[in-house]
Length: 260
Image 1 (tube, rainbow, N blue to C red):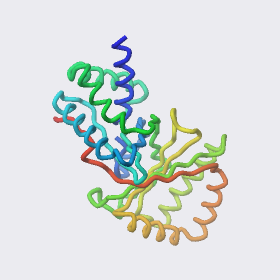
Image 2 (spheres, rainbow, N blue to C red; image 1 turned 135 degrees about the vertical axis):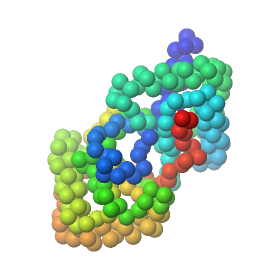
Image 3 (cartoon, rainbow, N blue to C red; image 1 turned 90 degrees about the horizontal axis):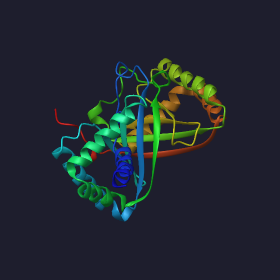
Image 4 (cartoon, rainbow, N blue to C red; image 1 turned 180 degrees about the horizontal axis):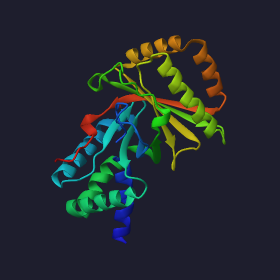
């Protein structure tokens, strides 16, 4: 019984901690990649407590040589994203085994204590699969910003009318072609939602130096797109039943990379 309970907790912790790419070059983004995102809403008043618990978990992972890489982001409305890149759906078994091994090394009581500290601060959480689709993403070789300049991210979640996926993806490729034709230098990455999302779902992932820099870049983009962009935007909106935007930043202090 204890082993079954441990497995359930591991699934929660592992889905919480996971690597949503920052800003890869066109050469790096050549094939679809599957990600598991843990999306957790945390009580505003307990954010410091939550992050302190996470940092203690990170220290424990380092102590026991945890082998999995994950990146963390926090949004401006209290969400924490922990995203793990998977080697296909079969990678879930290897991922689960790594967490079971960590729990065994840390000890059952210690593991539950670490998990309980973060879980107590959460209002809700959901686990979602997302697939990066390079053919629907715009990643120019001459991107306006270097990785070290990025300090602000946006996630535009797009929920389509049922059955409109193929049409949306075709239009999204038109956006890629138009952006290239107009000489745009600000990338966008497109993800297709899988299990755990309100399907059909897609996400546009973008970034800037800051909120002001991003807003200025968006204004310049729409001016450059002109009438072609306005027409394409109207066609895109006709396929969408609901949108949701999140803004935030990368959290290297809550991310983890295995020691080599």
